[in-house]
Image 1 (cartoon, helix red, strand yellow):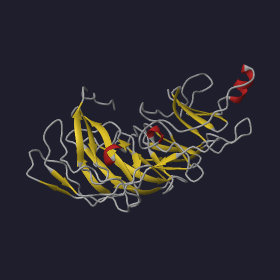
Image 2 (cartoon, rainbow, N blue to C red):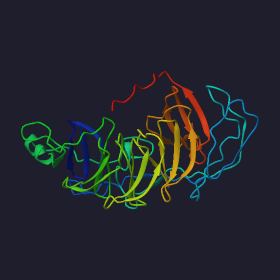
Image 3 (cartoon, rainbow, N blue to C red):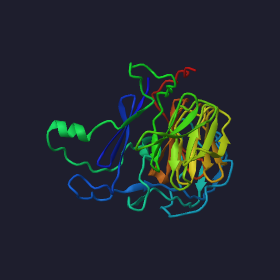
Image 4 (tube, helix red, strand yellow):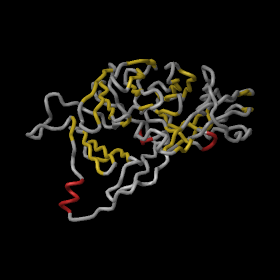
Length: 344
């Protein structure tokens, strides 16, 4: 049985799923118990905006090819990556001649000017599972501390007798809630996305996507929307305020990993080995990368190497691709077994 518990003290938000702390958020502008406002902590806001073309020589192994234009609108520039050919530890890649391109890496901004939240798996595109938060030092007797730290509400919990309620929702093992705009968003085994009031735990809206939701979604403060993916291959853009589906994309194969939000694109991998970069404005793919094997794990963003989308695939390798174009940067085999089939 899975339940969702919420505990708040002096601006610290702890979300507990199945009895384990899975994410946390601290408000950087909240007054501490001593009456002193902690120093605002930075919030990571990543944006991608590249333009790059590749010219390949005679290939010894076919490389995945982007299917659409590069992600538009540059916000900043970084040094041009090395023009040396990229190599694949598994097999040689074509010789690639690179031209300069622009990539705006995560920018550090004050919490006073950025929306603070736990917007996706790990709290940010890098999946660090960390957000800066100052906590008051514990003082006074244990009885006073227990009064300060208490369960405020429980959603989807047990009955008074300890068993599941009649409308209990099963949450798959990889599911974790996200937080934004004063709401928690979580998907369940039936394919329903739930929005809960972070203060009271009240259900604000629900929306079914028609397939099991097996991982976390992503909240975008710029579009005021949440993005969830389902096992039926549906990637949906839902208005955060009321859950209305305002856009969607069909990947054509099961999506099991968490949605990754980087700038104005979301990234999802599929069971048939495709990695999609989907523009949040139009919900259309900008490029597709063929990993050659199923992608069940979640993707993550790294600023190293000029920016990379990194993910494991069922070929026993970790892949890294360019967020601008979907071109492979590298692929490294690891000591990993193929994942067993997920129970249905």
